Amino acid sequence: MSKPGARLRERGPAPVFAALGDRTRLRLLARLSDGQARSISALSSDTSLTRQAVTKHLHVLEEAGLVSSLRIGRESRFTYQPEPIAEARSYLDEVSAQWDDALARLRALVEDD
Image (cartoon, one colour):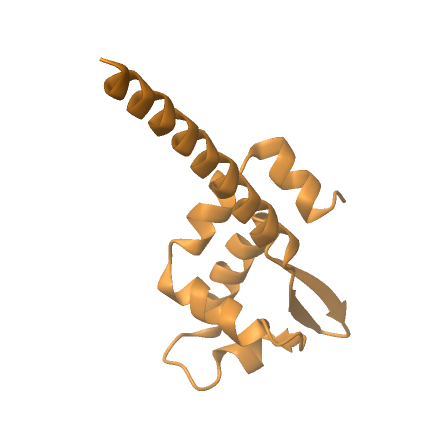
């Protein structure tokens, strides 16, 4: 299996942004961001979501590389993986820098006239 960061470089940041575009998935990531591995049962407790719904959301997050799972007995435990977020942030920083450069060129062009 490839590392989450390698997946982001291969497919680009779109799957990460798509996964983050859902409130339920953001809440799941927030619960996992403390570094504790949690089961589907633990993640579905204290919510109105079914275990099946939580499972579907976790699979989207796992496909984007934002969580990883480890099978322990009959349960899977999910853990937050911060690398794709860092790489997506780096991507946004690059895009921001490109826009800053383009705006600086435009400003220079307008001010020269």
